[in-house]
Length: 119
Image (tube, rainbow, N blue to C red):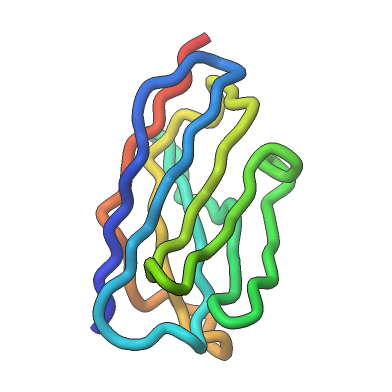
């Protein structure tokens, strides 16, 4: 069992920055992939960024590439999403989730944190 807790959301003006955190507790996640998703009202939940816990390899959706950066801290068992140059269209609830490398299904999800970008 793994518990994920997001934090760091809030209200920010367009062009500003926020850093989201996803703290993991429970079993070892060394063989997992950790991802950030977001969901705006009336829209589907979209995958925005991922990182492998052990190797640190990253991937990004085109919508956030060059503006967002995902990273992890092994000591704190936490994954971060640094969001820069925020746009109103980045407004959404952001979730972290994890899955085993060899699986396509995310096993554990956090409750999410709201990000609102004003124009």
